Length: 538
Image 1 (cartoon, rainbow, N blue to C red):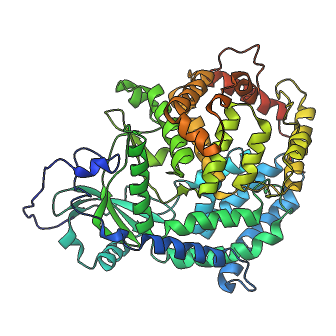
Image 2: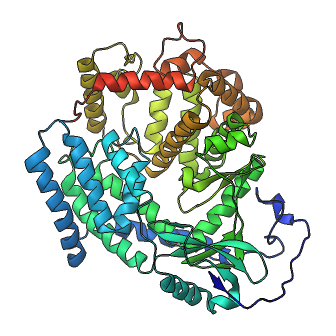
Image 3: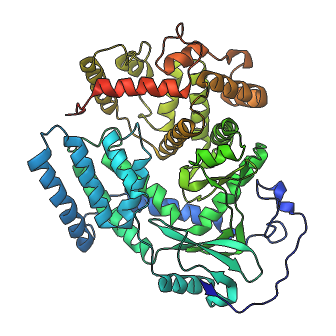
C-alpha cells in the first residue's frame, strides 16, 4: 500500500443535485452539478474523429506492420499447421482448432486476448467449442508493474501520486487487456477506483488491427469456425469496439449518458458510479468506488434476502428500454461488470463498450421487438435487414421461404442427422444472402446471452412465458403510444401473440402453458445430445 502523509480534508455533505441527472448513489462523493465535468468538452469532436479513424483502421493495408505481422503469422501458423496435419479429420477437430486459436491469442498479447474475450460472449454466434475456449482468456491478463502505473498516473494527471491520493493500492483489483483498476483514497477522503490504461496499448492495438485487416479477407471460407461472423466483419466489429475503449473520456461520457437514460426511464434499481469531474483523461479515469455481491454469487444474494427474480426483471427491462427507446445501453454485461448491492440495486461498471444506435438502427430494433411479440416473421427479417444484418436489397419473403421460418422444425422431434442437415442448410442460405453481424446486433445478442445465463444462475424457476408477457405489457402500457407513433401504426395493431412466442422457444403452444428456464435448459441439453460430436460446416 502506498500511503501519503496524513492531512485534513473538507467534505461537503449536501444532498446531491446530480440525482436528477442519473441513477447515482445518494451518498455522493462529489456532485456533478456543482462540479461539472471538465473532460466533457469536445466529446462530439472526439467521437467524430473516432469514426474517421475507424475507416482507415479496417481498410486492408497494402503492407501490414512487418515485424508484428511476422510475429502473428509465426504464432498462428504453427498452431494451424499442427491442427491441419494432426487433428483436422479427427473426432475433436473443431475443439482442437478452438484450443489452438485460444492459445495463440494468449501468446500474442492484450489485443488478441481482447478479441477472444469478445468471442467468448458470442454463444449462438460462434461455435460452442470456440466460445468455451475463449472464456478461459477472461482472467488471464498479467498486471502491469506498479512503477509503470505510478508513472502513467503522474504523467496523465500532471502531479506526483501523493499529492492526489492519500492511499493507492499497488496490487490491482483487476487486470484486463486494455487497462487495470486500483483501489485508492483521494486526499479529500473519498474512496475511489483508478482505471489505468496499459502503457503502449494504443500503438499495439493499431498495429494489430492493421495486421488483422490485412489477413481477414484471405480467411473467408477457409476455416470452419468463421460461421456467420465472417473474418472481415469480425475485424470491423472488433475495431469499433476496442478503439473506443482507448479513450477513457469517452467511457466516462458513456457512464453519464447511460445513467441519464436509466433516470429518464425511472430505472432506479440500477446505480452507475460517478466519474470524477476533474480526474479523467484519455488514459486515466478516477471514479466512485462501489461494492456489493458478485452478480454470479447466487448464494450470498439469496442469503441477504434480495429478490433474485426482481434483479432479473430489472436487468431485462433496463437493457431493453435503453436500447429500444433511447438507443443507448451498456454493451458488455458480464459478471465482472455488475455488483448486486445490499439494498438490492445493481451497480453497472465498465462502460468502455457501450451500444449507441443511430435513429435508423433504433427504429429497426424497435420493429424487431414489436414483430417478435406479434409473431410477424417477415417483419423480424425486415428489421434485421434494416439493422444491417442482411444487405439492404434483400428479398424478405425469399429469406423467410428459403430458411423455412414460417414452419420451423422442433429440434427435439427430429433425428440427429436431420437436425445437423437443417443447421447446415440454414447457415449456407444465410451466407448466400450475405448475412453479417453488425456491432449493435452483436452487443445486443451478447447481452441477451448474459441475461440468459443470469436467469440460469439466479432464477432457474422463472416462468419465461410469464416474463415475456410482463415485459410486453410493460412496454404497451408505459411506452405504447410513443412506440406505435414512431413506427407509424395504430395501437390496436400491437397485440401479444403468446402462441407465437411459445413457438419461438421451440415448443408446441398447445402442450405448454408455462416454461421455466430449467425446463428450457433440459430441452437444450436434449438438442446438444442429438447433435453429438458432429462437426458442422465441414
